[in-house]
Image 1 (cartoon, one colour):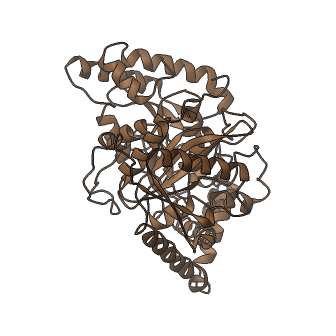
Image 2: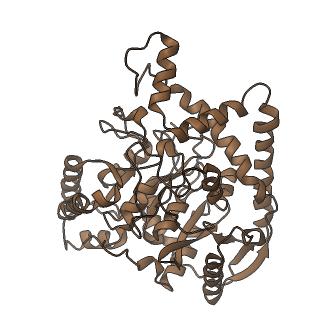
Image 3: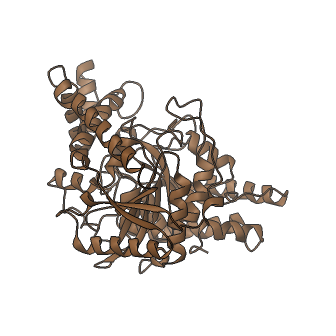
Amino acid sequence: MHHMTLAEIARGLADKKFSSEELTQVLLARIAQLDPQLNSFISLTQELALSQAKAADARRANGETGALLGAPIAHKDLFCTQGIRTSCGSKMLDNFKAPYDATVVAKLAAAGTVTLGKTNMDEFAMGSANESSYYGAVKNPWNLEHVPGGSSGGSAAAVAARLLPAATATDTGGSIRQPAAFTNLTGLKPTYGRVSRWGMIAYASSLDQGGQLARTAEDCAILLQGMAGFDPNDSTSIDEPVPDYSASLNGSLQGLRIGVPKEYFSAGLDPRIAELVHNSVKELEKLGAVIKEISLPNMQHAIPAYYVIAPAEASSNLSRFDGVRFGYRCENPENLIDLYKRSRGEGFGAEVQRRIMVGAYALSAGYYDAYYLKAQKIRRLVKNDFMAAFNEVDIILGPTTPNPAWKLGAKNSDPVAEYLEDVYTITANLAGLPGLSMPAGFVDGLPVGVQLLAPYFQEGRLLNVAHQYQLNTDWHTRTPTGF
């Protein structure tokens, strides 16, 4: 049962081959058995899961249907869940139980999903390896000595190890697509504003976007259908009709214009990954797509711009964690200043502190124009590059990451080397575009992903291309040994 996709689970439940409660019990047992190797969960919610599964079975018995009714999932541990710990992977929120459900959690619960637990993540979503979590590093099921990618590494590792069929995730600079590439999954970051951020603990508010990790594009379409939509509680949510994503999966790729940016194939890209990207291009050409070389001239400036904007927003967002209202509070403070200093110093990990300090510096009086304002101007240039490109092509294709997953601890002493791994994913967040990573092969036994980018609100086009590719390849069906 654990090898079934969301789509297969929906068909099995509809045909009464098994119940949601039976499936939930199987997966909870599997998590208990295998997750100690991976550390992909922070919290398990057995009682909630079983009660939700029973309720879903009762709804089906009363004639209700739905692709997500009775489907087991997990939530990245920055989506607020009422009465359940929402830690954001940090000591700062280790004791925090949210008093409400995030919109994404509420929408999926209403659709009948079963919440198995909350998945591990880089602290406050800051990282590319899932090593900055207060609860310890997550391990990649394809090789337990390697990282699963971050910050949604817990969700990725759990789905890749077949502990559950799909999970929610978030993407601020590539935190859905990079773990998807490292663990042989399909990961979708929707258009900024397509999925509500209400109840999603913020890292960088103008960049964060909720999405999903699953094994197939078909499953991502099913889960996005349940997550997307306008939310009046979120001022950045966009009131745009939500199409039937599953209905667009089987469209022909005949005549689809796919752009391949020449800047992607620089010296920093592993040549073996470049070869797999070219193989993917050839496969899509066989399906009728037309390939064209394009240029994104300002891509080289994206990483420095991102690592000014994101820390600046983080320093503002994380100022609320002061030891006074909620979260971690130091012992026996001498005065208010000591309370602030020690609560934040003890509650935040090293990577979070580093980004807060960088952000505070970039926003300070003498440096705002030189750093933050200039970074925002570069952001506009990056967006303009994409707008020009999408006048020529329908989809942009390239590598998701420059390298396969690295060994645990290999980049801990050099944060900049880790930041550079986001070179291909960051631009979509700066521009607010939808992006998808899909499995495209292996290098040294480790998975590699190919990234697709589309114009605003064209998630259906991404899912269509990925689904057609997956009908003609089998990379996404490979399972890590031992799982």
